[in-house]
Image (cartoon, rainbow, N blue to C red; front, side, top):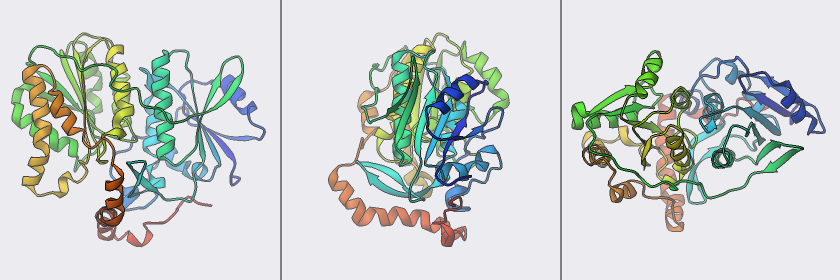
Length: 401
C-alpha cells in the first residue's frame, strides 16, 4: 500500500457499486477499496490478548486482522456500513470492537472521562456512510452521535458522507446524547425475568459472575440465556415473541453492546411485554454508556415493548481481582436493583442513580488521578504484561510502516 493513502472498507452485505462509485468520485485522489462482503469479521471475545499477551496484535486470524496495516497507515478510512433495527449492524460493530489493538489498556482522563492511551502517534480520519432511507430522524441522530463518539475515543476526526441530490462530506461534532428521553416504565410484579447474558468472554466474565449472584438470590424468578450459545439463537428469537419480561445484561464494548449481542437483536421481531437493559463497564463513569442507552430507548419502541429502563454501573473491571467479600459487596447493589425490578415491577430510581455515579470526573479527581491514580491503574496492567512476559514489547507498533 501507499503510506498515507485513503482507503474504503466496505462492510455492507449487498453489492452496491453505484454508491461506491459516487463516494470515490467525491475525492480528488484514488481510493484503495477493501470489500469485506462475504468475509467473516469475528466478534471480539474480550480475551485482552491484544493488550496483555501479543500487544497491538489480535490473536484472531480472519479478514479483519489482515487489514490492520492498511487501516493504521492510511490518512483517511471510509467505512460503508449497514444498519439494522435503528443502529449500525453487527458487522460494523464488530469492526469497531476489533479495532482496540491499536490502543493501550493504560488510561488517561480526557474531558472528565477515561480514554485508552494511543499506541500510534496518529490515527486516520474516520468517514462514515450508511443508508438513511430506512431510518427515522431520531434513529439517524442516535447513529451519528454514536459514530462521532467512536471516532472521538479512537482519537480521530469524524465525518459523514451524505448522498442526496449531491454528495456532502459533513464533519461530525459533539452533541449531548439523546438518552433519558423516555421515562422508566413499570409493570406488575414479574413472575419470570428472562436475562440474556451478553458477555463474549468464555472465562473470567464479570457479567457471568454478577448474573450468578442474581440467579442465586432470585432462583426460579430468573432464567439466564447465554448469547455465546449461538446454536440456540433461533429458538430464543422465537421464544422472545412470547417472553413477557426480558432483560439484556452486558459489558460495554466501544460505547455500545458487543457485536454478537447486536447480531442477536437483529433477529428479534415486534412483540408484547417489557424490556430492560443493564450495562456494566470497566470505565467508572456512566457517561460512557449514554450513547447506547439512547439507542436502547428507541429499540424498545421498535420492538413494541414497555421500556423499564437502562441500568448503568461503571468501575466493574476490577471485580474479579478483589477478595470474595469485596466482590459480594460490589455485586450486592446490582442484585438489589434486579430484585426490586422483579418484586415491584419497576426499578428503584434512587438506587439506579447511585449505581450510575460518577457520571464524569471533576477537575479535582482528574488532578488526583494524574498524581497517584494513574500509577496504580498502570501497574494493574503492567503486572499482567510482566506475568505474560510481554512487558518489553508492550509499546510495540506492529502495523506501522
